Length: 196
Image (cartoon, rainbow, N blue to C red):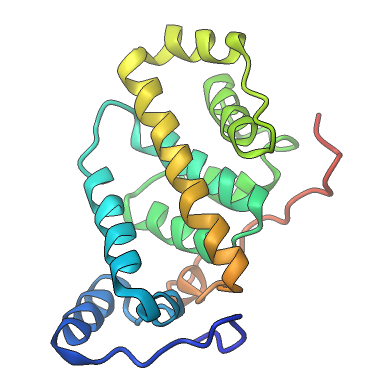
């Protein structure tokens, strides 16, 4: 467990805590540090987790595109927890792991299709402040994916920003999910400002 968080993890207690710990251990093999930190405000934790669970039911956009977009946000924001967790999840969902490990350096990698590159660029454009999304970006994604998928992809990217930024602010870092299941380390992100 990461003990260097800016708010120390709280002991997860009570009946609800027992359920949360059992669910986390079953799904992840351990209780993530983030749960202990967010346990200080269980309403926030449960609301964030509930939204994440609801999103799992969305199916208008390709799962791999959504996963890669979330990882691109995590890489850009610097959320090692989210990047590690989503890499682990990509493995569990049988997504393309060679591509998943290249997300931090997707601009330099030759592994991504033109559509995947557009999705990753869109995720980054939504993540910067001020967002740099253009009419052309959205129009191209609409032609290729359809309106329902673009709306879903946009919501996934927004949720990724909603979850990555608090983790970074609170000092929540990787719990080593990917390493625990023997995945190759993620590629290193290129220096900021070296975008092609």
